[in-house]
Length: 163
Ligand SMILES: Cc1cc2nc3c(=O)[nH]c(=O)nc-3n(C[C@H](O)[C@H](O)[C@H](O)COP(=O)(O)O)c2cc1C
Image (cartoon, rainbow, N blue to C red):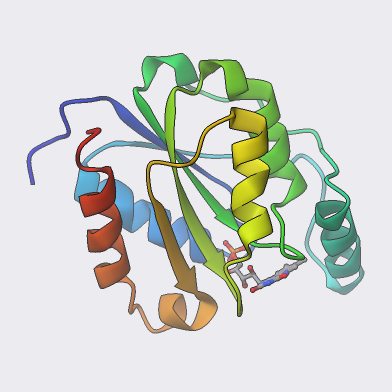
């Protein structure tokens, strides 16, 4: 595939690696920039699971590492995120809040256990003031079985008018 004409950047957060796997594959397909959103708080562990869910549910933010790139250099920003408690993880919320004024067009890549919650999409719409240009959603199982190439192809078709 030809490199996109617009500049596309993928920013993803991933605790257990599934969103990362999907986003890395997408960056390969689009031949575009990719960067991880890093939460500076420890999120792993059994007890953390409940805290993580609680913080997502109540729209909490966290401290994230400074980005290595400048978001405003990208025409289209793709955000990759897991669903937590039907919402988005604190690191993703912080990322979007901190960079909202520099995000022009955006699209979303979700991974989730059982439901691509509408509330997770509306969290972005509320902050960014517009609907996403495209949405991809892969279940945990699909990622583990490496069965997400159709979803990514459909996603690329959706955003192709912008890239
Ligand atoms: C704290 C926490 C809360 C979660 N809440 C949901 C949820 O409400 N709905 C859902 O479908 N999956 C939920 N999941 C499952 C994750 O969205 C799913 O496993 C995802 O693929 C993990 O992505 P990652 O490997 O990139 O971290 C939750 C996972 C965690 C850790």
